[in-house]
Length: 175
Ligand SMILES: C[S@@+](CC[C@H](N)C(=O)[O-])C[C@H]1O[C@@H](n2cnc3c(N)ncnc32)[C@H](O)[C@@H]1O
Picture: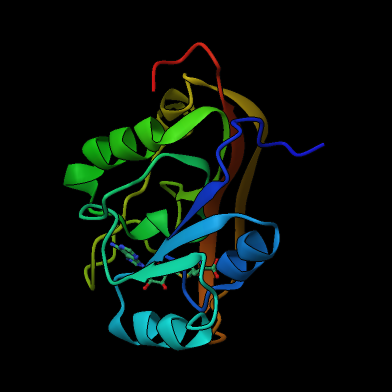
């Protein structure tokens, strides 16, 4: 049985990157709205999914995307870079978009991450309590904290502090 019990076969892939999750959700029968702020990523995904009639690629940011009603919202390794001053409004839009019984799966940056205070672009570090507070309208399926030294995809040393969450929106929560 699918974890998503919303009955809404629409998914959103936020900060879709090369589109791996978009591909998976499309193959699972969802109409997928995928967006990314990076122009190259947008071009790559537009090309990759040009023959997928149920995949809609947008060049948007978390803060500007118009979130349709969805059964699944995915934000893997991307909400780290949301604009922190606008994050509560952004999260409200995401949460409202997920239909009762639908699923959020995504990652949040923790406060001990090496990038938590970087100056090269916005990051949105959150405490454990702040992440938990985002999920009050949800039943948490998995909540994993990763807090360890590692390397970036470019092989540079980095401390990773990440909360990886999967949660189901409660049927009683207003949509
Ligand atoms: C580490 S990649 C993850 C890509 C994909 N979600 C995955 O799991 O493979 C982060 C992505 O978030 C996108 N991104 C960063 N800031 C963003 C923003 N404000 N709005 C939308 N996408 C953003 C980046 O362009 C990048 O493609």
